[in-house]
Length: 106
Image (spheres, rainbow, N blue to C red):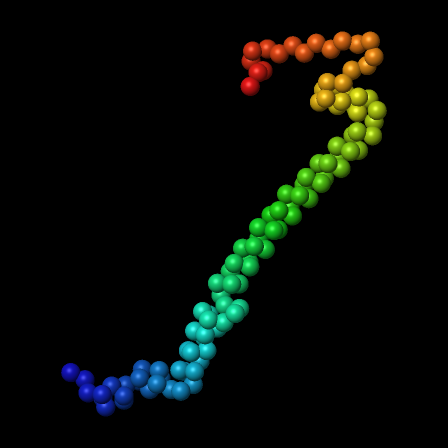
């Protein structure tokens, strides 16, 4: 069995027992776990930033689609076609019949 005096003479005990190493270890533990800006807080913020960047890409793509749709709607014939298809609008003295097949009914 080792005696304490023999254990204190080992290379590892002398290195770990050094006051600077102990202070450095305590500092790292404090900064990693207990500080207000710890690793877990930074990880959560990084995940939030990544989610927001994905939202930004999605909304940028949606804005581009809407701009192209607005540009397309500047043409009066396209606007009329859209109104007829989407909102079932009609001209005066015109009847519209909607025929649905059994296949197209959801």
